[in-house]
Image (cartoon, rainbow, N blue to C red; front, side, top):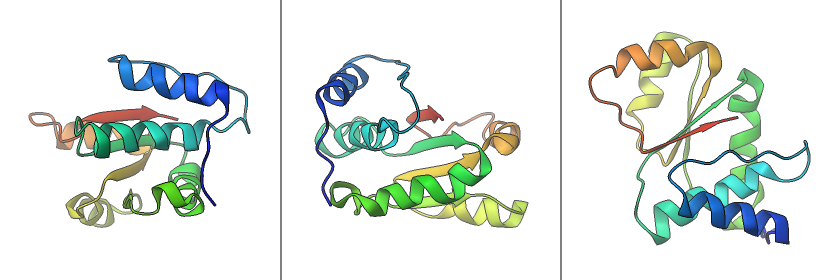
Length: 128
């Protein structure tokens, strides 16, 4: 299945790729996740402006929703997702993976910030 943005999603994609920072506000179920994946795709693959994207989300969303959405849409199946979740050992292993997208739960964001205090490796951060 291919993601074909609706008019309001195309507008959000355009704004997000052309502004240095943006907030996308929409009710649940209106497609913010594939819209954001379109932004990542554009900035990573077409414009080469980013190499690594961090997505900060509630645990279940970081663990299930983002990886599932990448696989759901044919447009994004090539994007790799590394889940920075679980024990510290598991999180460090996930960070060593070569991925396009890294998901982490909110509770581990402080740990991540302290780990990379001197050299933040992510070009884009999404707060979900």
